[in-house]
Image (cartoon, rainbow, N blue to C red):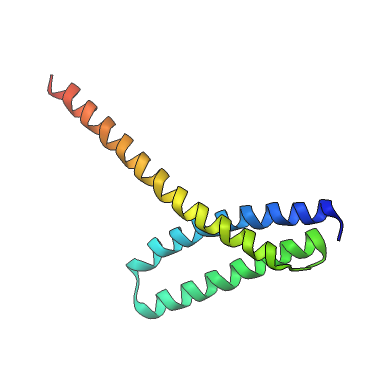
Length: 109
């Protein structure tokens, strides 16, 4: 495998890790409003779909060759996306609360 293909695979693995983290957070929030059996089925389907998507795209990029550093890049992307996503969510919540307080003060005047 040439260097260009390896770099493209690493970048894809990293970005996929971030997207998988975002999808996992959305799935986590979605499953809490349903029954236990539904939670298990939805989580199982989500994991299978995400794994198949990763391998299908990796097959298009480099004929499906998997190296340990691709999985390592995916794990780094997942944890970086998980940490950054929670920071962004908290930041947006603070900004929304601040805007709501400002609008409530203006309405009282």
